[in-house]
Amino acid sequence: MKTAKMSVACLLFSSLAGSAYSAEPPANAAQANNPLANMTAFNMQNYYIGDVSESDKDANQFWFRYAQPFSLGESKWLLRASLPVNTYPSPPTGGHQTGLGDLNLFTAYLIDTGNPAVSFGFGPQITAPTATENSLGSEKWSAGLVNVLFDASSPKIQYGYLASWQHSFAGEGDRSDVNLGAFQPFVFYQLGGGTYLRSAPIWNYNFQNDSYGVPLGLGVGQVIKQGKTVYNFFVEPQASVADDGPGQPRWQIFAGLNLQFLN
Image 1 (cartoon, helix red, strand yellow):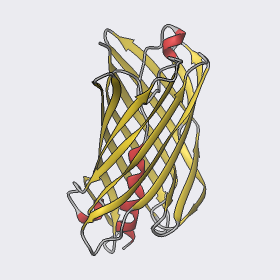
Image 2: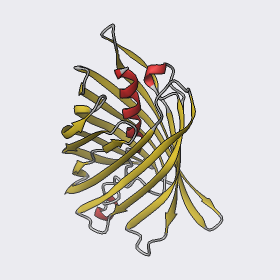
Image 3: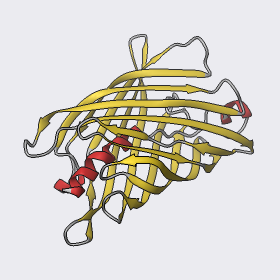
């Protein structure tokens, strides 16, 4: 079923990064989109998918994300939870179904790189079958690994990546196994005054059926600090330059509001 295959492909978007920081001074602006920033964050991010491969339909994913740093002894960690509200095509009626998708959790161990401007973390992830409709999730428990790098050594250009992989280990036997990899390169160019250019597409590969998607994007964002809350608004159109298989976005608009709460 094309809808089920699409829902599995869209699990990859749990790798999305998103954080906010103060636009002033410039040293803080360089940390605006660090997914490993040492502060509590709550993000609301949306993908409007204008063309889903092999369906001739549109779709939408709205993500709620919560990130919380914590310590275990001398070690530093970051916990992030992501829950989508999915709207997917529902063949053969030609309509759409909307509901909660699968919950993803990952915990990253933060390594001391010796440079406070360079963040590096890795750790486990797990995805739970919390979808309210069968077609909106995988109906599988999956686990895997996440690795994140963010380099803010330059106040002008920041870059990094978020890599993830997960494989199913339990769930409904009549659904396809999950074996997904994703790589999200990102780069941010500071224009001044909290305004920045951005590119943060997610490249995915489904090892189960050899489908893949390689989008590219270019967008703009604005960081504003009010009191102890930092607001990061952005919009980034993305288009596929290579894809194969069902459920891949041919073009989409990624937009969001990231909130961080200063201690």
